[in-house]
Length: 275
Image (cartoon, rainbow, N blue to C red; front, side, top):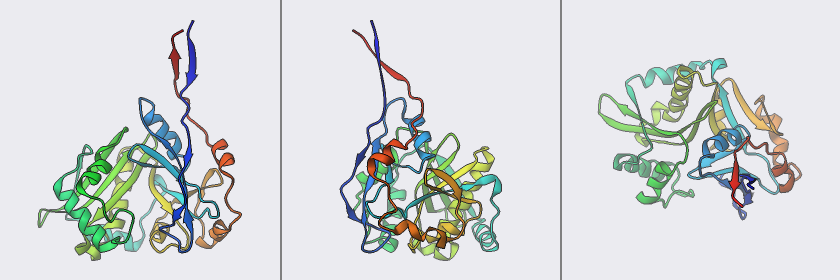
C-alpha cells in the first residue's frame, strides 16, 4: 500500500526589526522556503499574491501594526510612457541590453558596491561582501536571468537587474546602477525596458516589488501608468496615494493565522510514501 502526503509549504514569521521605509515602525515578514521540483510553480502562485523572492525564500510583509507595503505590477498591454519617461528612453538609446544566466561577475560586484555606497550606505545590504553578492545572484531555484546594460560609447557596465521569469510576467528581484549616471534616470529606464521585454514575450505583467505610500524611497513606482497593487487579497488599480493612508493604521493588519489561511496555494504534486 502507498500513501500520499501533500507537499504543502510551511510558513514562518521573522522577528520584528526597524522598518527601512517608514520611520518609527517595526517590520516583520511572513516567509516560506522555495526549493525542489515545485519551486517554479510555488513562486508563480505566490508572486500573484504579493510575495517576493530572495534567493530560496519567498516572503511578504506581515507587520503587526502596519500594512503599507503593497506589491505593485504594471499591466504591460495597457502601459503608455509619460512624456518624461519618453525622454528617459531617448536619453538611454546608446545602452545595449545583455541577457545571461544568473552568474555573478567582478564588474557587477564593483558596480553594486558603488551603488550601495552612493545610495544605501546605511541599508541592510551595506556590508554585503562578494560571496554574499554571488549568492544573491546565483542561488535561485527557478528560471532567473541577469540583465546587464552597457554604454556602447564607453563599453562600461552601467546597470544590472536580477529578474525572475514567471508564468505571467517578469519579476524585478533587484536592480542597481552607476551613480555617475544620475541624470540618465537608470532606475526608471530599467523598468521601461522590462516592460518592452515582457511585451515582446507576450507576458502580461512586470512585477516591481513593493510600493510604500509615504516612503520617499518607494514613491517613484506610482509614476508608472497601468499600475496595480495587491490589496485585501486582490489586484486593483493604484488610484491616488491618499487612498491608501489607512494602511498605516495599527488596526489595518489581519492576524497571522488569518493571513496564512487566505493564501491560495497552487496544486502541488503529492509525495508518495512506500509502506
